[in-house]
Length: 523
Ligand code: SF4
Ligand code: SF4
Ligand code: SF4
Image (cartoon, rainbow, N blue to C red):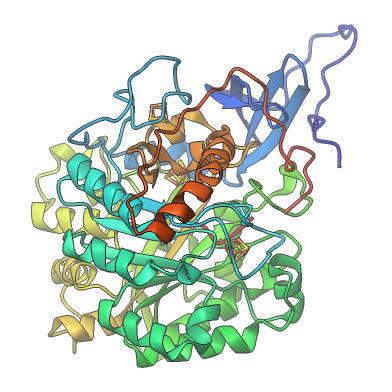
């Protein structure tokens, strides 16, 4: 597939005889990157056929156009959900070169880190065709490095909300248990482990350790069909192992959020079945659907036909027979509102009641007009902000308290008397559309609330890390330090990491630049 995407209306070579109207509305100007060389270029946001596109031109690589959001009406009306950001206690870099080359967080950043992600290794026990981390041999951070990262996270956040251990496959890191314990002793509210579930399926000792720490599991699960697992994960026979891991997590009382990557033409048909399965399985408290994004390793794709949040919501509507409909989902205000949408439902046997049907969540989370609305209860608003946040973790007491407080505004459903029954009766469905080199939008990244935490204290917004060139440079430097790390382990001495440096002077070429390659289970 050619990476230079023809626009639907190619620019004419010679001026037409008659003036013509464009077939789109020019909505706004932003900054993006060239998907080929990653230089920062202007991005034009265009509205056409009730869809949102980005068109951009690289002086060296030409014109590109990509589908950004398949519902222009929802996109343009989402502005009201843009919540004022919270400034972190400290920044880690200066404004020097301009966004997105000063990460971070630099003083121009518009949000604190709701979620800190630590990639403890680059290796994995799988080799998925879809893997934004491009997992493979490289580095294994030391426990001391991770402790220093956590200490810096506490310095910048006070009491951090969520730390996610990721990779590679973090469960195979020999120190993953002490790393999670280190987060626990630092009073980080929620500890999450991103995993493909393989080690959990078979390792009794590890399962017992998880049962003790009780992290929330961010669990890769793309569907039931062999073909789905073959195309996205490279292993057709994954399902029995996944089911075994989920059953064992239920026994260990560890809450699970399923993370399906939905790719056009591969597993669109699996969305409804995943929801029904998730609601019925005792370990599963939520699902985070992620339209496949084409950073790192990914399959060939057409940028004009990629999956977006509204596409997945339509699949949910049609495949759940109306159990969930479009209006049940409300954008998440802490980041840029087009990045995530979420709903929470009260489940009672076959009855599923999404919270927005009981309460007008839109009014509470409207940051443009609601300040003047006397009828808004501050307690309910705070509770809804807690739920409609990237740091909300279903299956945890905090989310259940917020759910109860929100429900109290409209009358608690019968039977919801105590926190544990609320935890067991609430279910989250979230949609998360990560940016790739085609959809990269500096506006979203500047308000990103999910940061990759690095050993030298830098905190880099997830979508900047994956697209601009940070990942490649950090990986090379962390890998180059690996012999020293190993030596220090052998000698029983402390490994002192060098600061990571980033330079964006040269164009970057990656394996994803031609629209083919391989996207993974994201945070
Ligand atoms: S993404 Fe945020 S931290 Fe990074 S350069 Fe831009 S404003 Fe600064
Ligand atoms: S990680 Fe990407 S998609 Fe998510 S909030 Fe940050 S910029 Fe938006
Ligand atoms: S997507 Fe996850 S499980 Fe698959 S190779 Fe990448 S890190 Fe490993």
